[in-house]
Image 1 (cartoon, rainbow, N blue to C red):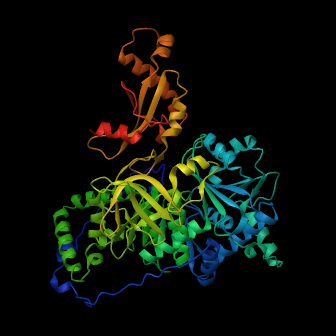
Image 2: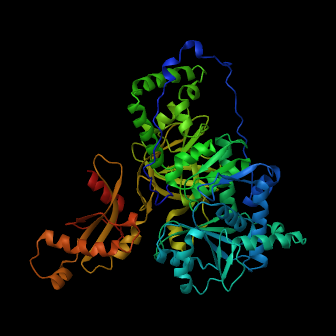
Image 3: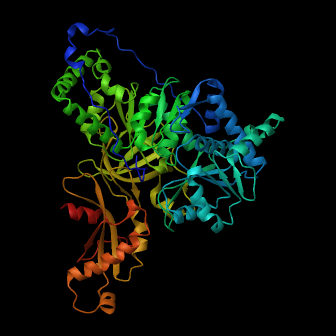
Length: 614
């Protein structure tokens, strides 16, 4: 699922694993269960809108815990019920409309994963207006540009973003209100606290005004705007509706068994559809709970405190867990024994005797003791890592999709997972390989009810990726892959311009090329992710055709190649300073021949990259 951007994994630590119980396992300790395999019924849902999900869940599970958050690191996790959440959402929604007159307007939501983010997003989906979730890691000027491009009438921000908001407020005269989460401050010119709005909204509801919950939601109506990258003139804004989001809930329910006893661990940023749809809307629909991680450096202690059963992750996180745990096993000198026990437990599981949780209890305890499902998405993952997760008894699932598909398009079913596959088309979607080669590989096209309305204010860009075939909308993912005989998708490459790094960062090359195009010494350039030998990480690189005439005019004649390289590199470094760190160019290549181009003079990126491979 190519949707995550800047996600840096800290050097977290697990306690030393002793694995003392492994050698004590013998046949006498194995109890054979009933050989009849239980059939799990995967109940498909048919929600039309997220408001319907919200209304049913917060009513049916009102006394259950919905969220757990540490508002103070030194204190235990606070438990928040479905009923409290319901009241806060209705209070905020009512207040935003009745007090601030924000009905049908656009509202930016920015901040770390915190309770009031969930409240704010749901209030928008239930009838206030259009939600614009924004990456909290964007630089100040990019956040300012997002607010302007979105034509936002209000900004809801977390307390940690208070200083940042102060820097841009004066440049945003069109914004009517700046609303601070976890603040009870009353209205003071354009500033107001979210808690104040919630309390005032509750009073309005108590007086008999139920107008907010009476708002009817059109499932096809534009309700969410997500910018997939930065905010230069060619950045893409994805427009989503309630149908796109509710279908995520419906289709995952058909492939994965979840219930009210499950607990999701929220560690990925909520402004991405992967986390906000699958890590928030889905568990809410099941009456499950969500434990909000304090931050990446607290992953291990938070896992052990909250005991989650499901974790959504990017490959980098799963691979780090794998490396850390296995390094500890090696230190304990139990690696050979663990390997043999994996073989034994796999053989036993083949005859419906599953003792993995008993055998690998210490590993489970380090992950909180309850993890049963890990879902990896956003980028490809080493299959040996996924196989290891399965080997220790945790269900390892992989998802595939993009922000444009809100995001689910394919998922490996829990009842038939296949490590290495990106998944099988979900029940509301269809995948096909466009113009396959002799190996069956080609561009992956997606037809789905989760497919976006289109790109914000960019009909041309929409028409470039959404094709009408036999009267139906098909989305060109830009990925290259093939389908096996059972319909499982395997991604083998990318043709679309977006560059996705190993830890799920999305980089749109046109954005950077636009800035590099201002360098007088560059005639043409192509930004790409360079694959380095012995590493899965992509190095952001640029191929440049120099403007030799301008170089001669500015820097003199008869310059050596090394000097030209140095001149251009110094200019690129100036551009790098204007970019977020993960978008900075790390490698420059002077190109001696012309780029291969289409008839419309666009560089054939895929063809150029294939030349490198050859």
